[in-house]
Length: 376
Image (cartoon, rainbow, N blue to C red; front, side, top):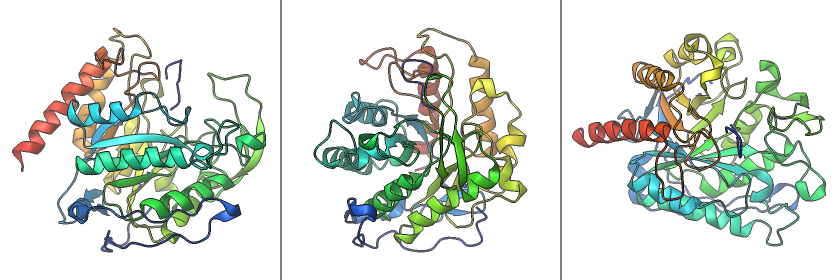
């Protein structure tokens, strides 16, 4: 959920047993775009390789894994990020996360910006560095496609931002990203941030979509374009040979997964379904994602309260309720956001002083870290 300067898994028929270790070179890029080579990684990471079985996420040894941490936004709206490398280190070392969700933008990945002349090389190198930092710390990273462009690059007059569905350019993005990080054990692919205002048929299979402006940007022009469904993005990732875990967000700005149990599940393996249950969505969680979690792994990709109010205690009751629900249903989660203005904010300043929401999250992470350490 993008709130800059405001408030801010398909049926798993098989247990995936493919190795995470194969190294391949990407084929020619679509439309003359970058064709990334698959990056090598430290083979000591192999035990981190994740797969799904039923509604569980398991490591290479078949042991259940629970993932929890924070979002670190800004690489969707800036080429270099806002203190993003420092925030990654802080999240790992001070907040003791096991997962970081990193929002990205497809135009920036390829350097399709009016202010870029390097074809996105610096941006991709920065993401490489963050992935490697997480790998060294044995922390997972969810590379989340957060901003898209309705099928037209920004330097060709397109509108880069948070849209209701992915587009043809999103296929290009996932072909290259999945090739680059295929089978790297700590990398997870978040197919699309927050789909909304389409049917579950379009969500899964694509179709003509009318992009509605975000409520915090009502002046944004309405765009009609050909949307790409989640199935196509999933298939694009798998066509590269990548076996990485893939997360798939629901409708209603990522919240609603009810269609998964109504005939619209994504066909494939190694899938996790993602939900964004903010307080204003209500608490009918059983209907929107709880029932799905009985059959498939579910990940709370975003949650939070307090907006930009640094001392706000509103919805603290919601936070306790959600964390209790997450424990009862074995849900993975990342709180939004380790940034000073992309609310709900976890920190007050770039000295990483936590807000009330941030202090709550930090306490939750400390309890989980202690439990994890006691089980080693």
